[in-house]
Image (cartoon, rainbow, N blue to C red; front, top):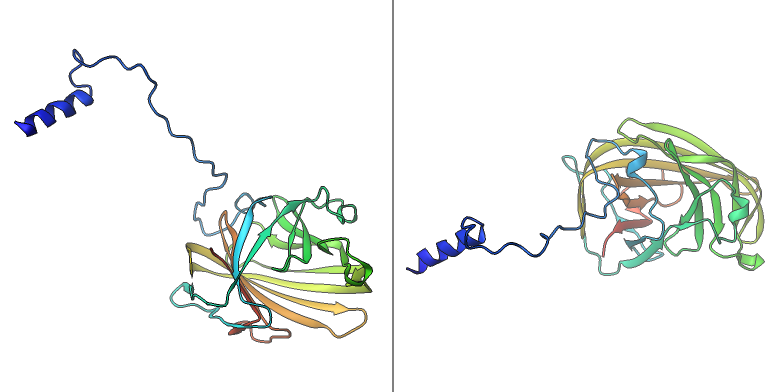
Length: 272
């Protein structure tokens, strides 16, 4: 008898007994549409629309402490890079991109549209513009208009294309940023930053707190050649995911010659 009563109740709830069901007096519940502005389509490339700057959104990064190093595997195994190690001495860095309005250096970069920290300490900021064809770097500046002893203002004569869209395996390009009459940590500066970029692989990236089923590996080598001083080079290997942007990066020690270096001066990973 109990099973029969339950079946009858279920039929009534489903509207199968219209003569006895009261008419509804409330509108049916409709869930709010998702607030996502970008949905990955996993087509093997990153388009301009899938790498939009999220101004005001906080990025949480796990990063090794200054002065320490991390062992890294840049080659991966079977199309997967496992960067999931949990390091007890990792630090949490909170980074946030901001519009140019109100920045002390805004007038020096009239064509730029936003700025974001270059270093995890937030002391040096990159100045950027996002277009349908590229993410451009216009130069760098100290976070605040600091006293002369620590003020930095480096304006490229022409912007550097950090990413050329669409990004996909096989893409490569070079660029140079020339600085004249600049200031670096309070000192007069002139020089040229020469960049070489290559998107050379795709696969899965496993982090401590997240797994990305499809990322692109982007290699960057930059050589800084000052007008006065010794040139210095550095390599970076970053992993980009559609709609998330760069989710992990390993930076080499100075003047590294091996593109598959196994010791990183800095390892940053999106995490909690």
